[in-house]
Image 1 (cartoon, rainbow, N blue to C red):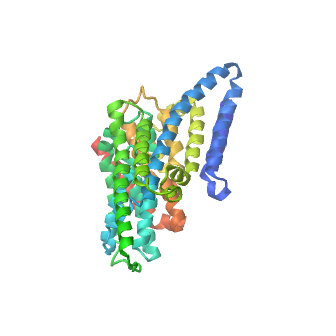
Image 2 (cartoon, rainbow, N blue to C red):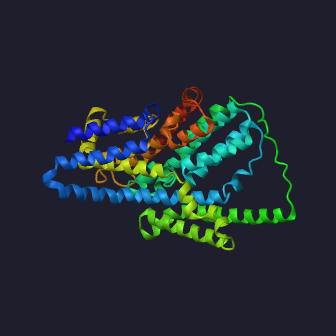
Image 3 (cartoon, one colour):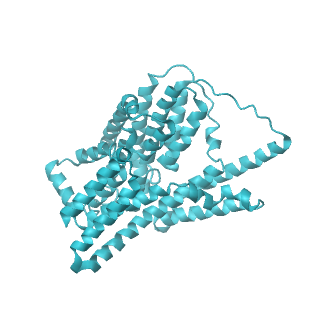
Length: 429
């Protein structure tokens, strides 16, 4: 039975990693892998079927917390975006100097990613880069920095990266400690690539054609109203996301309750802002429309991979693997660093999910060095290759960046930043 589960999981993992060459969506593979692993476990424990069902129900509760959190957060971000909320931030970027612009965009991405998430921030910032930079080669270099900054910014925030969110919801880390412990290492992992790229950029960006559209008094009034709505939704949306850790600290309720509260507030505000419009005009600003735009495929991918990992955990395969790694490698820092490097090739969600099952909270309590180091390495290690993070894959599609081009131009500064952040983290400890 155990060997069957290992074989199924390995085959599923390979299919996920080779999603593009084999042309099978990783979500479909993850769902099949998850169900297949539990099926083999159930058939191999026929005399203990009730125990298997109880274990599945227990794990599903933990998985549902993560999924509801992601669903709520994605919907809030889509609602803010529908109201052009992020445009208020991006329209204030006016510099044409390449180096200045690189630093501004890098730092904005870093902090915005901590408040939203790395995938959404990468998409928003690439839209900004497209408006500011005409030359394709320069735009690709900026896109590389956006990927590094988005992943670095997501690593130190409990809501900035799926893997950090998983550790936070799982009880391995607390919001205050992860922000305090990982802010500097994450910042260093961005500053080193920024310094590296600064020496390679000169001159000014070629400006895109200016928009010469003239506004009538009626259009000007409409623009003022839309800007007011954008400001309100940006403040309420970001406020709701940032309030989630505060809500958890005050009430001790799970984070998904805080995000659902935030979604309810943002929803009500959106309804009030558009209460005077007819149904058709309100539709683009509705939650129903926002739900149709979120990446539902990613939600189902997390469901599939997390229940597959749960099967490995229930059969004690992960704890056995942890013991084997401790005996073979010995140094935990090397183990976690290797996991971070592996996340450049393999999706970091299953890697972190597996690690959470490998190490017991009784042995490694909340806010242990292991969990914080894991959050940093899994979050920033994905920047080393363009396929190593959701942000990277999204930018790869948007800007048509070639895998080899990224490896030649961006992988080295990303790798230097990764190890520099590790050095700072270890020094802090």
